[in-house]
Image (cartoon, rainbow, N blue to C red; front, side, top):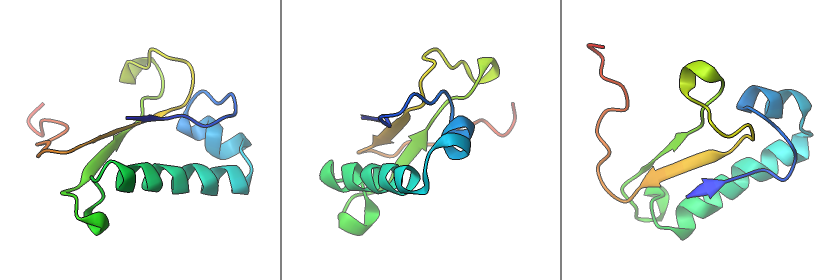
Length: 84
């Protein structure tokens, strides 16, 4: 799943710096609502979820528009290998 704010924001930092408090609260509420809708939210009986957003070249950001990926529905394992 992807959740995308309506405004033209490039990264999470850009979103936090330029969005209104209402936009930030609304976006975060929407992310939580989507997690409940797709039944991955632990409080709604799901097993949990992971949110991912990339920012900049080092993170491999390919789309220059802020968005959040919601991953869930199964055990996800480690995101980053601590030995790397």
